[in-house]
Length: 191
Image (tube, rainbow, N blue to C red; front, side, top):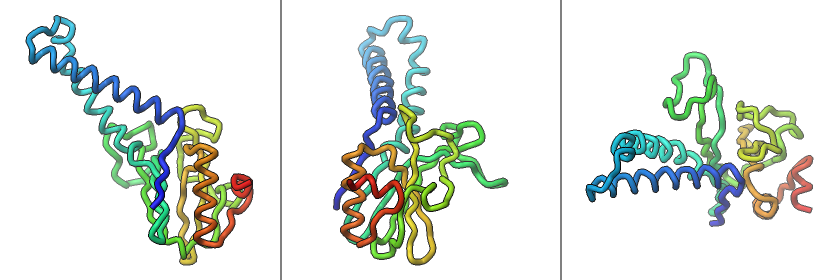
């Protein structure tokens, strides 16, 4: 099974910030346990711990992002800003972003069922991410690929969070395993 993890600036920055938050919380805790904490550490210790916990919970969505190809299946997991349907329950306050909620889209698709795939605009569909980021966003780009199956289901994948080398490998492997070539501008990735 081949796994691909996102390589984009936003993910790296997010991981660095969470590591700094965790390091600060651990340092504060160690200083308090040793009895050498200064007044500033003592005053803001709880705040430091709460920020660390919230950062870890928020980042958990991003850590699980990946594409896995193997065993006759394609597994796609990526975070997306989803606008909840009216009356539907909202996500936790940690994942709320205005009128959208950050949600991990995690789907497994049988490779034998794939009949078409390409960028959503080339196939005539709308993207599911309502966040408004484009493919040239420097931190968290969004350029979705629609994957259509023989049972008329449509799955999405954010291809923009992967490097050009990764995209070429992912779609070349899908093409080799399914015999279906990508459509539209996505076909240019394989050149």
